[in-house]
Length: 210
Ligand code: URA
Image 1 (cartoon, rainbow, N blue to C red):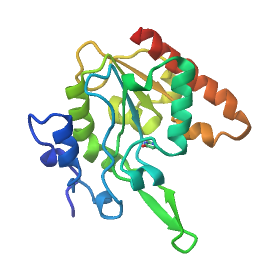
Image 2 (tube, rainbow, N blue to C red):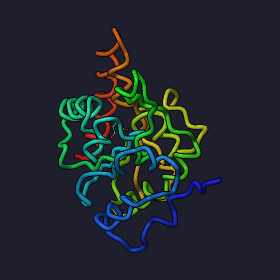
Image 3 (cartoon, rainbow, N blue to C red):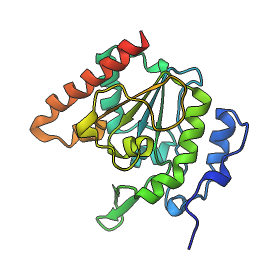
């Protein structure tokens, strides 16, 4: 059976550019086989906040950049409403390859949730990004990111919006968990309320950054 561990692919002592380059060749779990490319984080190494999503979607997989599809538009709007300069944040995902099933005779690629095993396999990339950036605050967008950073028992519904101690070694940093922007898009008539909830949580981040 294939190994599930990105660890051996993570170069020691590399900067973010070096990590991104090495991640392009990651074979640390089987997800690389069907995805177009690795979607590594984007942003400046000096960013004071790191936002972590679940995994790239269809658009991200095609463009090779995180949060450039519909969920990314929601995130951009929420950051703007919360008063956070997008240039101040680094955005990434817990899993760096798009996992999907194909529907409508091969026309549509539908997002499939990564397993705990895939999230754990990919975690060495996330911890390497966090160690290099050493942000003041990490924002877990949704349950997958929150569990990757806080352990499988963590529940966003119970602890969203709180300033917590991250479950990964980051000196003095705080972690805040909130909903994933894609959940806003799926929320039907509750969409506006859920969006405002995301903005309210991001305002806590903005206050920490100011
Ligand atoms: N959701 C994520 O978690 N990451 C992306 O890049 C896009 C959607």
